[in-house]
Length: 453
Image 1 (tube, rainbow, N blue to C red):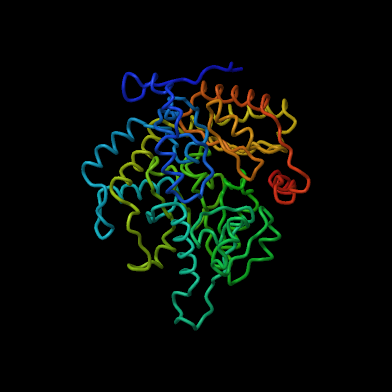
Image 2 (cartoon, rainbow, N blue to C red):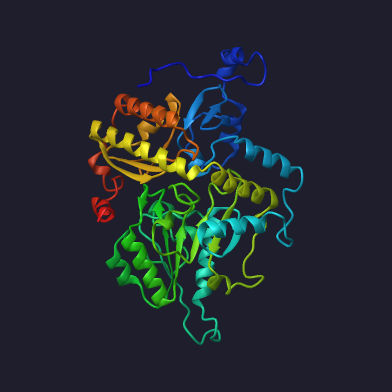
């Protein structure tokens, strides 16, 4: 059990930094916070803390306080912070070419696409700026394939219906938002893209009832991230695959949060026997630089021709060089083995905490991706963790989400578990009021029952 101690300090720029932090001037709001308050759109609820740098599994704020990072930039910082090989690659390539335009080849797009094809078992790659842009591109591909290639336009009805899952989150653009189930994200921007109908999570009967010859795609997160770390069952996946094949539709796997090693496999869908037609990735791909990708098979790729899709910034030389280095580091360091080992230790420790605290309802996930579902509000625990130097977050009000870096050590897993034990013990518990329970409740028990079936 960790004892309460003063925050760890690191040197700032200059010998007198520590004294300056203790001066009255240091108590005034930082210029960065003042400018953010005045000039940024108020799209986030942020604590009055300015993070300045990181090293490995730790980040530091402007006062020098040290935090163990079990959020990882929401699954982006898979190698932690300031990994020497990533820093070296950025320094080298930023001095050569940051951007060249997709009107021309660069020396890293092709090799990166080859590596991703090898990891995924798919054939072709399109590079985008972000996950949500990649989702939009995948939906465009599905609609494109829904038009018959050998029939004149208008002669044969196009397949246009899209089946996402309830509790899903796929992004913030109009296309991605249209297949995102959460009402609070959707309602202010409706009407959204038409032709979307949500399927109950892991409910094979509901999938079968809603599938017909007008469906062009089923889209799902192999493990729902924002929804609370809920994995798609093998039974549901395989039925979705069979129905998509039967009706000439595509199966799209959103692996933006759960892919590229996070579960201890290159892709989370690789625990199933069959593959998707399209996989979408982003978050850790370029180790913190913006980069997403659509991976697909040759049959889908055959429908694409120049001019049907494109991007300005996706696949720039520096981003692709960094992404290639990230994949090489995962292989060279055998990080999948570390992810599986640390994941087993995390699960064992979390299960032990579950026996100690009766408000822990469920532990879900694997590798470096876990959700701790509570019967009480999770927000106060996240806030207390921040005060004590631990970064994690809460999704859907009741699930603490843990996304540590792939290179997390055995000692850091122990450090985290000791901190979490103390936080769960000493933080006042907040039970939701009955009158608010309809809008703030844990996900249905039926969902957990389906998962375990």
